[in-house]
Length: 292
Image 1 (tube, rainbow, N blue to C red):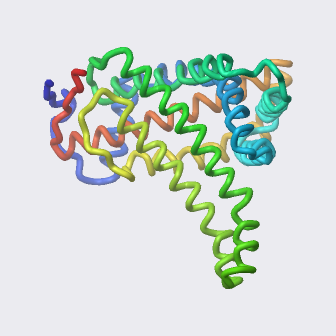
Image 2: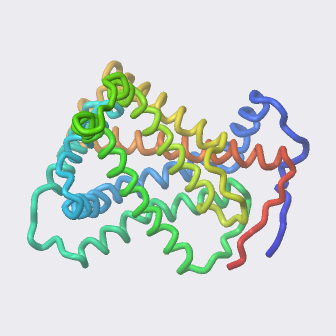
């Protein structure tokens, strides 16, 4: 196992402004916009396979309301042009088909994991480490994260769809206070945000080829989730108010908008990783590569 000090770690960065400025500089130096574009391309082609896997998982769990929840949540973030494409894909995959068997699901998971593999490559560049993990380990990590992402979506959907109903039902038997049920309507959203932060922290932990302790919440993960939520609303407002992609690109407008949104999301994810890397350098932490 080798221990490296990143070449850019000349002096510690001790304030939020300095951390942000250094993260922006490293984002540019590492050419993360190119990696974000590659990730957006992979995410676009992984969308349908991932939803194929998701619909099969929901069939086992018996959560048909998930599709309505997906549309509702996507509607909050995505502009109308992108929602047209998402609605088409969701409608297509929720249509029952007798041929959707285990082999098809396995192929869907494999294809959807391509985006995770691309993220792992980009995170190696962020932390300036070489990829030394065995191919089977990288593939296994990508598959596990694809499964974890699907499960997180199902958990989030369950909290949003059945949470209030379950509490109202339980209140008849255990005398839950009405204020507690009302409170649940508010705390669900922070819990969803926490789940997002947890997923991003897990990506930052297992994605790069590093030996590092797992941190439940990191500054980069919090920054990435906050920036993603803000950027999603801003992008949706921009597209719906100022842009006219359908006029410019015709029938391809929805695809272009969704691709741009994926690019924005990938860039935010990688920028959060840059923040974590800057903080690690500032603390003088050694970068230990996994040689397995």
